[in-house]
Length: 129
Image 1 (spheres, rainbow, N blue to C red):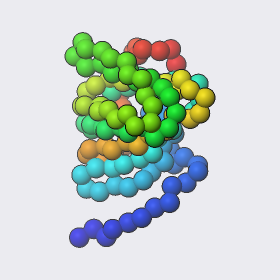
Image 2: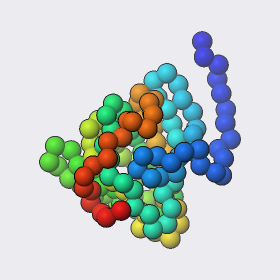
Image 3: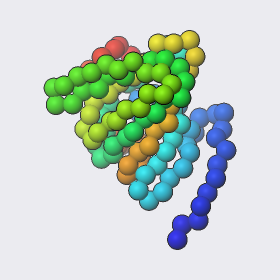
Image 4: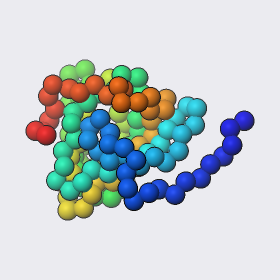
């Protein structure tokens, strides 16, 4: 049996995601991992898609936009506190901060994030980086 854990989230980020966003580690179990993600004011992420994981995002603060593309279907969603969305396997995505404060959200990843080689950088996204 795995022991239960608790963590205090640091003000400093633990890693930069392949898309350029700041990642603060929260928790991981065998089937999923959870992180806190921040995109600074005015920043635009690098467009990517994942090789093996799916994600659920929940926005905590800030304002932004998220572009998703899946099999020829595209959508741009306005993000703000209280919005959730999914990134199914193989979905291309990019996001940007359009507000005056950092865009902050929680990401649940299943299976747990395997490492930097997971994200495939796309040739084009919705916005210039």
